[in-house]
Length: 290
Image (cartoon, rainbow, N blue to C red):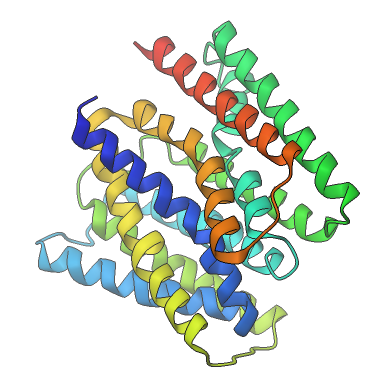
């Protein structure tokens, strides 16, 4: 892996992790489902517009359309929708830690359900992930964390895991930026329906809301996705996924700096263990696929 790929991987991990902190700013002044649907409308139109400018087409293959709809609903609507709702009461650092367990869940699922060989290093990584999450949750439960919000985050990461497994290899065939833009528009449609059914729209215009919303649309919403696809094309999906081990670090660090969220000793130990577990699982899958 060359230095350019490493730098892009670091940038992706930072952008992905920062989305939880920006979401906390957004839901403080706007209803979560409405705000997220508008975010996907803007990001989706930007993605499709740039894709058309680059000469890409929305004449996708059947597999790409399937991936677009599945990922748009499960990741953009269910995963992020539940996280946005949860972050009205759950700290951004905790939401980021729960979401960062996705590579562990994917590794467990492909081992149990798809018969993919998992080396002892990977099994040790899964065990480490469970231990790390248990440490953090034990500390947060004693501090009075909102269990309903935690439950929403947990269901969200399961939806993200399912989306990742269902669309494996289905996004090949070019037009990747068009696929990304259409995925976001699918998420917008699903979230708009959810807003009409379950939410009373709320909006309190403020500078923190404007800055966080703009940042979320452009950086985690669009730029991080483009960087991810570039990284996958450059080094492959398994090696690119190794950078997910940095998400717990960056997630809690950004929340601590910008939101002044407290960070205890058990949290730090848990984050280190989870990150090590993610890295072990990804390295194990990388070796198995070599």
